[in-house]
Amino acid sequence: MKKIKTLFPLSVFCLAFGSLSAQAADLGLITFDGAVSDTTCEITTNNGIAANNVTISMPVVTKAAVDVTTRAAGGVGAKEFELMLNDCAESVKKASVSFSSQQFAELSSGTLKPDATVSGSAQNVSVALYNNTATNVSQVLIGDPTDVAQSVALVEGRGVFAYKAAYVPSADWSATNSVQSGKVNTNVTFTMNYE
Image (cartoon, rainbow, N blue to C red; front, top):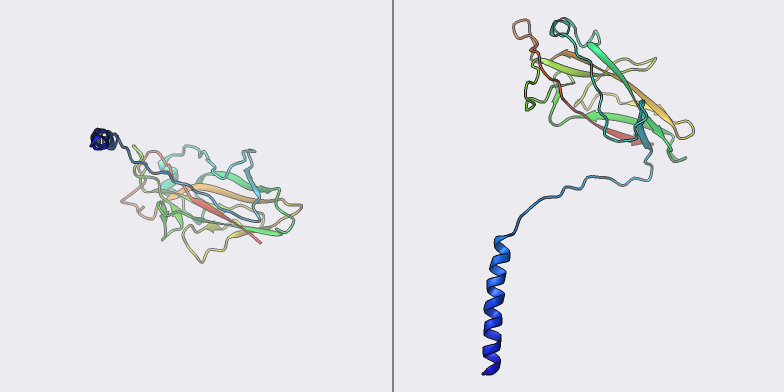
């Protein structure tokens, strides 16, 4: 009998303590993002920052300038940038890069629309990405699987991808639905492929 009396208060205490700790529980989510590769190179930009996440600061342009340009003309407010590969393994002889955007791609024009959730976002304007090499200045068609990715031969483990970004009228633009002033924040994901 004595053993039962001793265990009973302990059981009640454990049940009460367990109930209190359950009331104080919080739930959360941790996202891990990464990859494993035998052929990873160090990626930097022409400003020397070593990172896979790059920010390109575009200049401020007038809405009138965007209204009168086209994608074929190369847009306005162009900003040149480079993705540079360094310290690639000897086995890597060639690299190519492709672009996609689940959230901001305008598939009909291959451009990037601004993030509409940003307060004061511009309307009817997009950002177009262009190849910017001596032999290729064509538009990169974001979200188009038939678009030919820029590729470079690596020399001594190094290579450079040259691009420019510019403002262009969006796919929704028309003479009666012109550009509206505001902020232009957008993004694109790049995938570096090694051969």
